[in-house]
Length: 134
Ligand SMILES: [Ca+2]
Ligand SMILES: [Ca+2]
Image 1 (tube, rainbow, N blue to C red):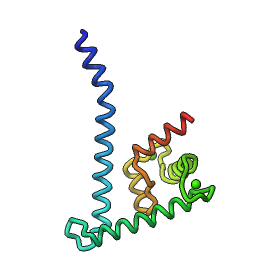
Image 2: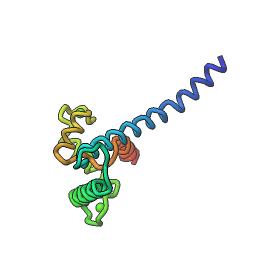
Image 3: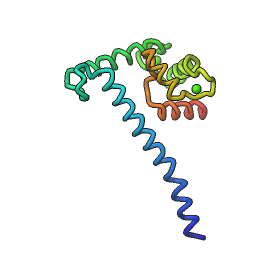
């Protein structure tokens, strides 16, 4: 009985961590695959230094455009309130079935429109939690 309780407690504590780690890993793998698809100009399945630099430049440009769009107080960065507003605008635009989440298809639609949310889904979840608690 005691052993079962201990095992259940350990499982309860560590399973969410493992799931989060898995989500992060999947997210990173998807990002890598998307970057490869987009920036592997010579199609050799790897990113050369030049291709990596092109990818970095494109990301920096995208990030600057994103910040400019949602930086309502004009300080050149996004504070938590601006990020939450950005996320809300993004959800309003791409959560086409209005379930309050972005499915893989909805996320893909945003990416295809060149409007992928900056930040990982698990980070967006954390932001949402923070906003709910404040
Ligand atoms: Ca700002
Ligand atoms: Ca949805």
